[in-house]
Structure formats: structure tokens, C-alpha cells
Length: 309
Image: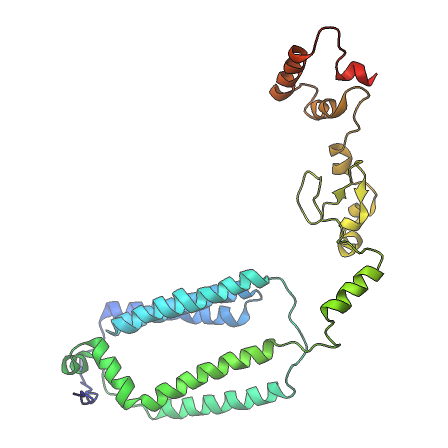
């Protein structure tokens, strides 16, 4: 048994909009307009995404004011909570400070985009000029005839606006494909195979990977050079770009590395170097190790320090 489509019943009322609704419209409308301008003029993508979240939340409030609770919940849960948060996750993964590519993947795409935008604006202006109303319109009559807000929206979408619904779905799919095309980068040369990559690496000066930054160092940062087992700095562990930008990395041993790496005193070993770094006072582990060594050592046997001499 199929349900017949319920025609849209528009009720015209001469009553004016309430003062609270008017105040909410102007306050939230101003915030939404400013946030929309922030989306366009923000220099950082993360800021634009946050401004877009403000716009979507404002639209959800407008839906609630206009007695459309289903659209309000969908606007918050689907668009703000799912789609926009996905955008933020992608921005956090790929980085927010990368330079934009100035290479135009499709030739003439800017002119084509401008023509399509002008056509869309013309159609929008034509539709707005044909709208005429003589008072506020509510949704109570349509909801009462269809049996609720959700049932009424589903009936209108499936029966009356099915062509517009399918066109919107096709538009979203086209937008996804367009994003894939725009994000595609053209490879200049031939992509090397795994065999060619391995052969070029073996023929090079460094068959093995270069030492990673922060190895045997106090700070695990990309601009901190690695230290070799003898305490010297591994120059190849730093990116040449960082070395060229920061004059501090041009020296063989940075100042903080000189303070960190202390040469062991004769007879002291690594424990003496660690004690010197702490100010000369041995910690509890060193004291317990010395006491255990003395207790387990047979009488007359020299210790580690005496054996070293």
C-alpha cells in the first residue's frame, strides 16, 4: 500500500514575527555572515574549517527556529559532526603549513569555473525574484497532514522533489571526482621500479639509511644532530636545508651537544661522567652498585677502577 503524496499546504498569517525570533535572526545571521567571510578570507585552512563549522551550526539554529527539528539534527550530526570533522582530520594529517601548488592540472579550468558560477548566480537570482509572500509561513499544516515532520519531509523528497534529489546526489559525486582530479599531480618522469631503486641505492655513497636525528641525543628533535658512539656529531643526520637555514647547525658540535657529551675521566668510566652531569653527586643506583660490588668481591681482589689502572 503506497502513501499518496501530501501536497504542500501553505498557510498565510498576518501575524508578525515575534521579537525573540527577530533578535535571534539578526544576531545569529550576523555571526553566520561574518563566519562565511572568514571562510573565504582566512589564510589558514584550519581557520577556514572552524569558520565553516560556525556557519553550519548557525544554519542548524535557523532550522530549529523555523520548526524543522529533523533538518536541525541532520545539519549538526551529519554535516558539522561528520563531514567537517573529517576535513579537519585530513588537514591535521597532511599538514597545515604546506605551500599551495601553483600548477594548473586542467587547462582553462578557471574560465570554465567562472562561467558555471555566473550561470548559477543567474539561476539563483531568477528564482529569488519569482518568490512572493505576504506573511510568515509555518510548517504546522503540512506536518499535521503527513503525520509528523520526518514523514512529511520524506514524502516531499521522494515524490515531489525526486529529480532535484537525484540531481543533488549526482552533483556530490561529481564534486568528489573533481576533487580527485584537482588533487592529482602529474609525474614528470617515469616512476622507478623497486629493482631500479635498489640498484641506485647500492651504487650510491650510502647504501644503508642515514642515521636518524635525535639518536644518542638528549632531545629527540629533527634539528638535533645524532651522536656517534664516540660522542662526535654525525653530520649526515641533519637535513641540509636545516643546516643552511640555521647557522647554529653549521658548526661541528652545537653548544648544547658540547654540554651534553662529557668525556669520561680516567678511571671513572661512564658512572663518573653521569655523576659529573648531575653536579658530582652519585645517585642511589650508583651507590647500591658500588656496595654490591664490594660485598661480592673476594678479599684481596682489586676493583674495576684498580684493574683499569
